[in-house]
Length: 144
Image 1 (tube, rainbow, N blue to C red):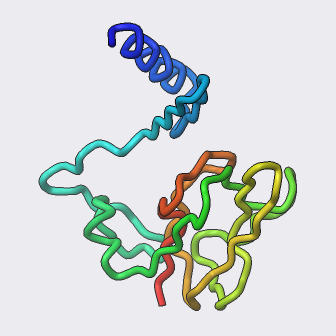
Image 2: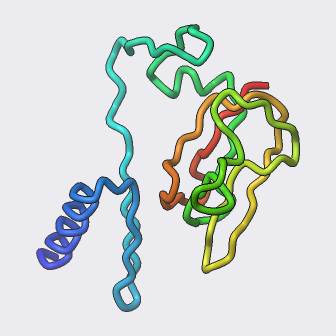
């Protein structure tokens, strides 16, 4: 048990040193998936200026209730554009339509275009470009 704990602590240190949000390691028959979660929100969240100057609560759970969420349908690496150096598919504040490409998830060397199920304005893009996202992880918030 101590050996496993030391291994996990080493993996966590690698995540901290490289500022990673997630790490998947396979060792023999075992797979470890480590995902950094945001710290608990303070009791009285500080306001954050939105794109239009309006204030939105910093606590995502409060703001999240009014948005449609696009979650990862597979585990993969999140890419905002079709190739390095090209424009992202969408930016915060962009209006999107149903079926519009939002991002690409790379899984097993396959590039999977992820499209919007909603029409509206992109209010948040949660993963960083190049981050590993888990199945069901929220990627976009869209205000209809």
